[in-house]
Image (cartoon, rainbow, N blue to C red; front, side, top):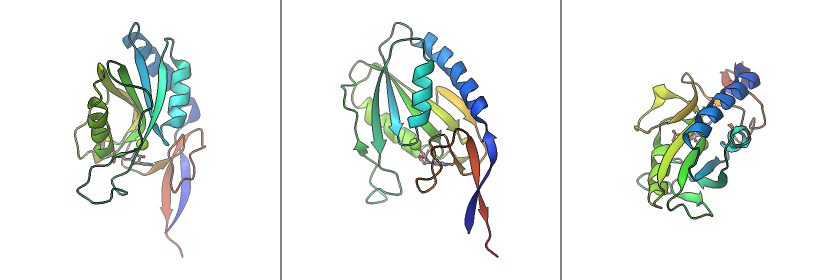
Length: 178
Ligand code: IMP
Ligand code: MG
């Protein structure tokens, strides 16, 4: 099987318009709070960069990275941080900035790990929600787009570390070799 990039599923213009809408809602919800954006590397980086610049309120940012379920040393082991937050999270209003919620496992585990550090509040802002694929219930307080069950790349999301730089989201299509 080879793969090729399909046409844009969500264009750069649509992404930027939705980010402005989300930023307006978040700016209103977090006015006079102590907002700390926690960007989940690597996929959330481009979304974080645009979202934080569209906010109308002060905020701080930090970055975490998670071991994936596939990389976990044993199937029973819960994924850990490969990079934890540098700043103290106690009593902060934390908004996680994620690229995509698929099965929900990563997000559910991430919420557990962050809650253990006693923030005042914790919410999720995910650009994409592949809702049909959910295996674990996990809240998404701010969602960019609900998408169908397909493997997507671009705007931070990768396949084998490729395609992250695209300004839009596209489906990676499988092509049978002849
Ligand atoms: P989960 O299944 O919700 O735990 O998602 C785990 C991670 O898989 C996400 O944070 C993404 O990094 C990655 N992922 C899931 N679906 C896609 C996709 O369609 N394209 C690229 N990465 C994906
Ligand atoms: Mg991710």
